[in-house]
Length: 190
Image (cartoon, rainbow, N blue to C red):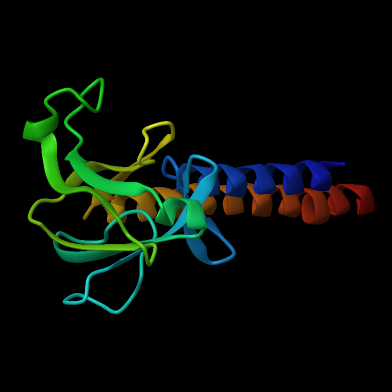
């Protein structure tokens, strides 16, 4: 019974950590970063070519030149006008609050017939940001918005938190195992 509880707690902890990494409308599915926009999805990939060849899905590892690519998975998005905006997260209650002053990057609405929207931006400062992708039909009857908070250069703190949580879960699991299999058996044999 104790072992089942231990397994359940460990799985719950791992699930909590995985959920804590989800960012708004962006998540990972089978190794691919996907962003939900209305009923459709876009794949999301980021690179920092001057720092490494590794891709990232949500948080940007360091300040500096960054390339982000969004790729529409459904044809519907290819027929819509797509707009990309990155806002500095300054604690605004609403994204439209001081919109122009908080805008870090803006790509005006346009059709991307290939379905791929790529932009380069030099993030000069570490901090918290909000990505907003809007898709709007020509006649204005359909509008989808994807909003995803992310950070630049703040990933070390998240990795430390994950390490501490998983380490604590491992220590609890070891303690329960030790009590159940070592201490309880010594009591029974004595």
